[in-house]
Length: 419
Length: 217
Image (cartoon, rainbow over all chains, first blue to last red; front, side, top):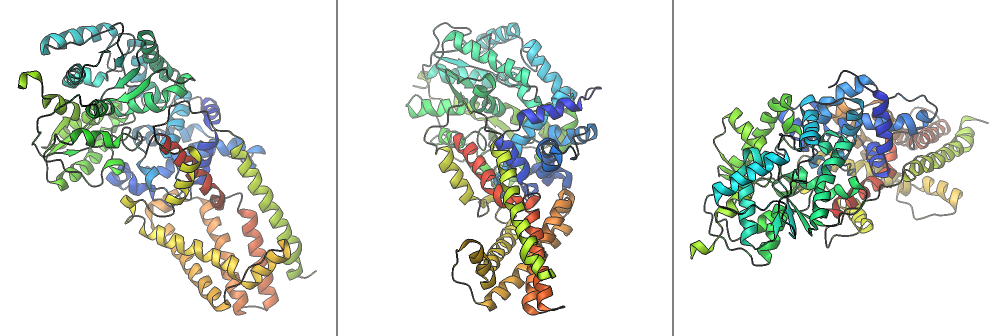
């Protein structure tokens, strides 16, 4: 949190953001408390302050202060500095915008959207976790939250290409598809990058990376810093337009997919001139076209649905389709698919160091889910989920394994060498 | 003018005027905020916003399968007092006569005995909802004065109505006047507090339905 808190900026931002959808949601809560049943932060702590409905209060207060009966008379309480400080932890540290509470709400209130708008208001006021804000500023100034500059990207791609004897095209003129990266993958899970390339090369896709627009994660969106959100979005849009590609592929990163597929056109104010796919969607498309054949993967495993790809993204079925004919012992966890529990690190929470203890508590829910399936391998399609769970695994001494669906697919691809 | 005349006359008329004005004012205030243009491309094969909205309104009438156990009390008790209130309000002969005098519309009434029983069940159900609110750490924490006032103004017409038909505690005319006044308070409060969810439920659910359907969820 910064020293100067501009409460008026938050109030103005709230007012600018509130259209019919947010107003309907902000005013509709009947305080039934059922959303607590769906929230991993409440379930992990049993602390009522984590009830998602409680997170509606700042936006509802700001809205009523301007538009309610008392507000029009200037008599309604206004949003205060104390409110912003008090809700900072609830809005940033303990909401992944995973949308699970929306499933249970009898009124259908979308608290994830409310959190997004509240983050933007808080960011305008200068309220929010410093490390998360720093990640956003790093993205703007250095190209990525983890400092993956265009030069570093080029270096690492060269290294990965040499090391793995694989073609990793960069700024290839005439490419049809732009592949983006999450800097988490590039720094921590580079096999995931190589795996995507291996699969795309095998399928004969004419694709490329771009130095101009490569970072898929959008910490501008996650922090509510709308100017940075636009900058990050425009880098990919500009790169895609310059290359003239027909499609942009988002790697194993849930929020990156959510932002580019379901927000970007609204952020830049015009329709995107290309299609956006999550890597699992694109690989499923290629599989449907008969481009892949896989060797059996016999290790028993279960699948963690990244919220922004399944529950909020609508691509739930594609990961399962990819596993068909590949996995010989795949077991769904309970609950699964769109009802699956969140990893606890989405929505930028992974980048907030002080949230680690509560994230580790949340991870217990996941390990219990995995244990109930009788397997000890957890596969996902989001590097951020993987990183969140990897850290929690180390902290909680969980002995299970964490894997990436794209890496498994690449490892089990039937190639010419197998003939 | 005695109390009953006041209740039947100016009180209920003013209350109805406030209800109509208040509901329109609050609803239009939301509707006129407008909806941001969504420039994203909807997932192929998904329903349009209207159909998705209608589907979502219907879908949330029953709990989400994942949360059926967690929702069991809220679902069962919620249906009991909502349906109970509807039966008492629209099934009791004097209420139908009141609507007929006002609008000319009428429909067959339910037997009074049924109404009394449903009224008692509704009162018990509302009491259970209050007990739950007071004993659940989550609900107690998130509740505001609005929740308790809204409960009170909903419960009052049920209790005063039962007292009036049972001639309990005072002269029938006095009890009836109190009942009508309690209804007037309910009508006046409805647009301003959380009871406005009676209107917003459709808007909120439909908005979410359209939002998620676009994504193919």
